[in-house]
Image (cartoon, rainbow, N blue to C red; front, top):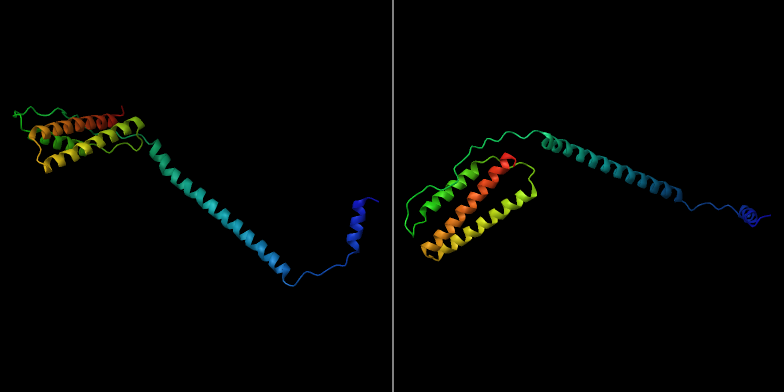
Length: 173
């Protein structure tokens, strides 16, 4: 006889023992808990799939619909020729306000933007914010008018560039 067959015969000779009371109840309880946990995980996975599918439908619609024709009218971007003296910067303030208005009246940017365009816009907006901070500081410290005129001139140039980039963006360039 094989050694394995002998071991099986020895096992058959052992007395049969009854399990402790309640063991089978605990085993069945554990099986039920694991089955419930599997069902819960399946339900969560199904809900996640449905949520992703529900979110994908509007996104697919937005990405595939044709872009509306822009309703932008061309604007004159150069400031008016207003006579001024060396210390006057009032025409630059007027031009800056006009460019702010033009920018506010432009249609909303498209939902997807080219990275380089977004970087250019953010860079211009950051530089405008920096110039605005310098203008506030110059006004608070009552700096010389020629310094303020230089800052307002810089702001107008930056605003003009931002309007041009945003206009090109609406045209799809």
